[in-house]
Amino acid sequence: MAKPKLINNLPILNKTIAHWGKVETTLGEALTLPDSTTRDGATDLATNIQDAETALIATRNALSTAQGVRDSTRKAAHTAGKQARKSLRGLAKNTPEVLGLPELPSVTTAPATLLALYDDIANIWERVNGLPQASVPAAKLPLRIPLMEDNALVQLTQAEFVARIEALRSAAQTLAELELSVSTGIGTRDGLHKQAATITKDYGAAVRGLLPTGHPLLKTIPTLSAG
Image 1 (cartoon, rainbow, N blue to C red):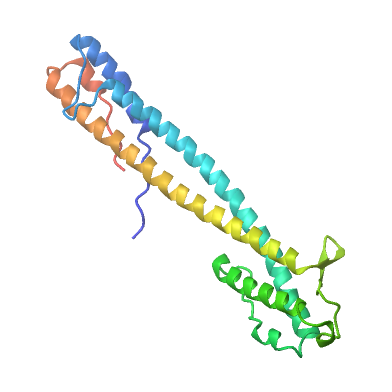
Image 2: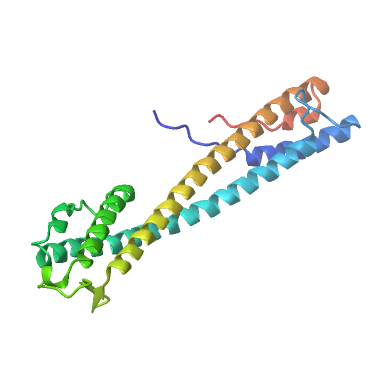
């Protein structure tokens, strides 16, 4: 089932607050709603809605940035992981350590899945580095793997691969926290908009009960849109 579209009740709440002031002037006293909400309380709610919207925009912007960092760190770790598998299999094929090298799925696989596989590769690489040089005659230990980055050949160490893994782990954690913050922020904002709708409805009913039929202010009571 599709989630109902949020109705922005801030404009109608602001109109209600302005109308509220005129009614209080006419009555010569403060108007308090049945749930004890006052005009000041409605004004505070309007401020809270605006603050919630601003905070949500900032969090969504941070989320977008975090998604980019996750993607770039995942690509860096994945490129190194794929080459590490090739180098370990090609240069240390006669050692039992490489028998446990895992296959790597697509780079777009969930980071949690990839991280476990990268950790396995890094651990195997570390064990191979600890072998006697004579058992890995095809490579100089500790093993470095070749990568082309920025049109240049680099030789990556196991520690540098681990650093890439940790960068992805950190990026994935940051992204997960921001996704939760966005979800929480949406819930908070939506709840405030619902409060605004309730106040607008209750305010209209209260004014109709306080002012006589035909009073000019009854014709300008703010009403919620049908949506």
